[in-house]
Length: 101
Image (tube, rainbow, N blue to C red):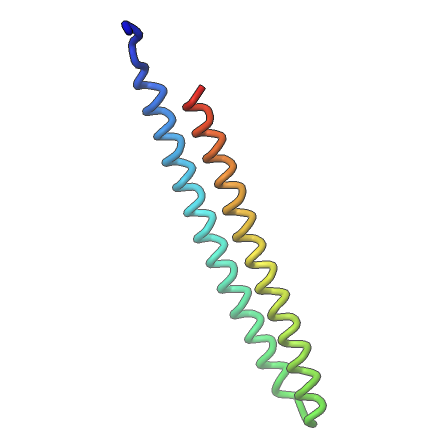
């Protein structure tokens, strides 16, 4: 057991993983900001639409359409966060796999 341990490789891998974490956090914050802005814009638009409602039928139709749009927006936001988590996990696992080689 006279093999020298190469700590440089370990330090570089740790540095790379930390950089990946920082990039993922930055992307997550950007997604959160965009999600908030999109939700605010949605509610502002829907509030304007609601001002013109005249009949109970208008209210029901508006409510169904608004909720459908809201759920689609939330679904898209969830998918964006899921994709970020998936890709970040895959990148991290690839880096960890390099360590074991």
